[in-house]
Length: 311
Ligand code: CP
Image 1: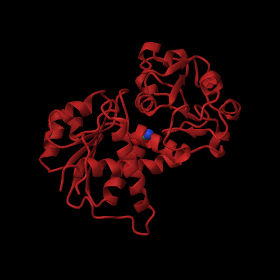
Image 2: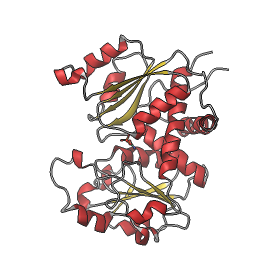
Image 3: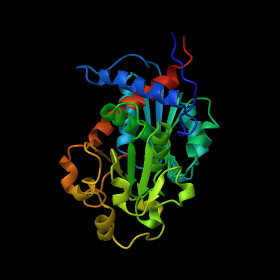
Image 4: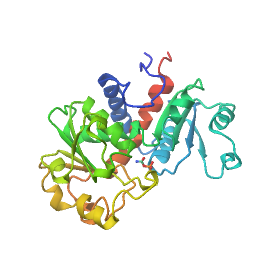
C-alpha cells in the first residue's frame, strides 16, 4: 500500500491538521529505530535528490536534513549563499531555476526573508520544505519539539502548560511552537522583555506574561529562545547582563515549574545569557534529544513528501 499524506509542501504549521501532525510524528518515531542500527541506512529514497538551499547560517537544521536524506539513501545537493553566485548578483528565482535544471526532487529552504519558501513553492513543481524563513515560521523545529515532548509526557497534551521565554516577537521557532502546541491541546504562555514580546492580539493565542516567573509557574515544559539580535536593527534592551539577570533561566526560576518539567532550547544557545551554565545538567534538560529527534522528523517529512501517492 502507498503512503498517504495530503500536503505537497511543508511551509507552515497552520495547514496541518492534528491527524497530519500525528502521522508525521508516528512516522518519525518508527524511523528513529533505523538510526540506532549498526548500519543506519535503508534504500527507501534511492534515486531521489534532496537540494538543501541555505541562505542563512545553520548547524542543526542543515546537517539533520543531510543526515536524514543520506540515511534514506537519497542524494544531497548542498547550496550555501556564501560563496555562491548570489554574491555576483544572481537572484533567488534564477538560483532556483538553475538548481531545478540539475534535477532535484525536493527543496529544503532557509531564507532570511519571511515567505521566501512560499514564493519558491509557487514557481517549482517539486515539494518545498521551509527550514526557517525570516521571523515567520520554522515548522520542522516545532514538529521535533513536539515529538520530544510526546516521548517524555505522552501524546495527550491537554492541561499541559508550555512556557516559552525570550525573544518571542522575532522568533520563527516561537511562532511555529505556539501554533503546534496549541493545536495539540496545550496552554502556551510566553514571557520576555516587553520590547521582545508581541502585542496580545498578535501572540497567536499564547498568554503574554511580563514576569518570567508567572509564565514558568506550574509549567511542564519550559523553552528558552535565543535573542534574535540580527533581526532587531536597533537595541531593544539595555545590556546582555540585564537580559540574563531578568530573563535568563536558572535553577531558581525553574523551581517554579511543575515537578519533572522539561527544559528545551532549539539552539544555538548562548550559555550565560538565556540559560545559566548550571542548567547543563538540569534533570529535565532534553536539548540533545531535540537534536536527535530533528533527524527522525526530517526523515519522516522526506519520506511523506517524496513517496506520497506512489504505489
Ligand atoms: N534550531 C535551529 O534552527 O538551529 P540551526 O540554526 O543551527 O539550524
